[in-house]
Length: 91
Image 1 (cartoon, helix red, strand yellow):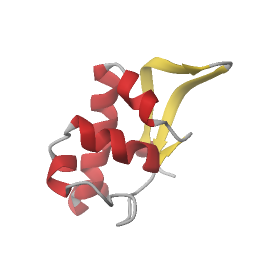
Image 2 (spheres, rainbow, N blue to C red):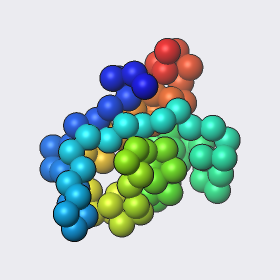
Image 3 (cartoon, one colour):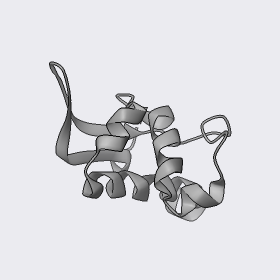
Image 4 (cartoon, rainbow, N blue to C red):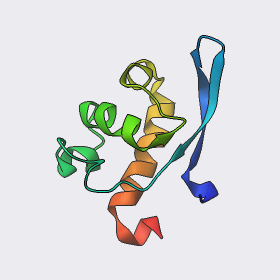
């Protein structure tokens, strides 16, 4: 997995004993994006990100994790997601 697909969170996610400091995004396929509008994902609509990020992150984020995420961290992840939608940016 390319280092470009790793986001270091400014505010790590805490789940009990687990602390998530880095999140790796995997290239989405059609199944990853099912049920959401590609236009919404491309516009970084929060509702779309809440649906797709748990499907394409490692460690796997929950919808609750995404909902509670600080805005700078959400935007960093959204930037990576948008990069996957543009073939020129994803290479």
